[in-house]
Image (cartoon, rainbow, N blue to C red):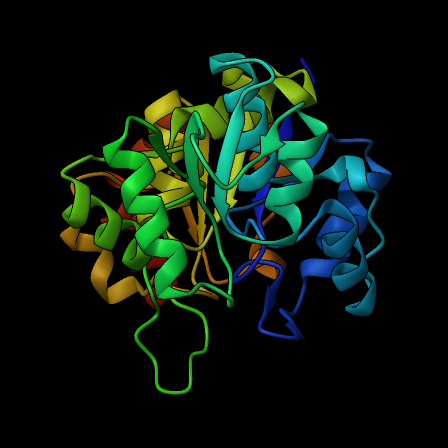
Length: 281
């Protein structure tokens, strides 16, 4: 059976505008072996073309068909919940494009859904409008619930902050489509035509990439080149199948030969603890 990969981007492939060592050669090797893969990102601002252009600037060649964003997952989801419906959108770029491509009308009154994605042009008036629409019956959808990084100088609030404000103001809980939601995870796998057992997700975040993979039965690889730190992994009740410093340390031959989660964890002395011991050696 063909095995394939869902690959997070920020923290795995790049950090900010810097390529993470080994990421480019890993993608080249996947292509050489003709292994299917998707770049998977919760960022709803970028269109697939935007993502391809960013990767090209880092020296990685990719096609739009190699990209799947939370905006694309949201468009897919809404088109199946209510075909040719309407949405009031707090978001930009990729989200607007995806909704249009899935037959949705973007409106400023009486929408079926209020949809929240990344953006830098929100106003309090827009948020107030969204509150009124939700209280009038519109369903609240979030492309993801990524938190703010809580860093000085950060110019873009995490979606979770905006969604929390809307939830508090309306008493309505949002449905999130992006990672770790099974919606995005399953649609991405089906785009590759893979069976669950043959799908591996690679990510740097325990709360989204790894949790999402575990919830739908994928094999999981955590990189330590992004958000997650090895000294914090023991705090989680779940663990990835493999932990590596970065993609440059992933032995693809060994993973493809031995990608049996039960076996890997057993050989790693009960998952994370054993893996961390190897990383420390």
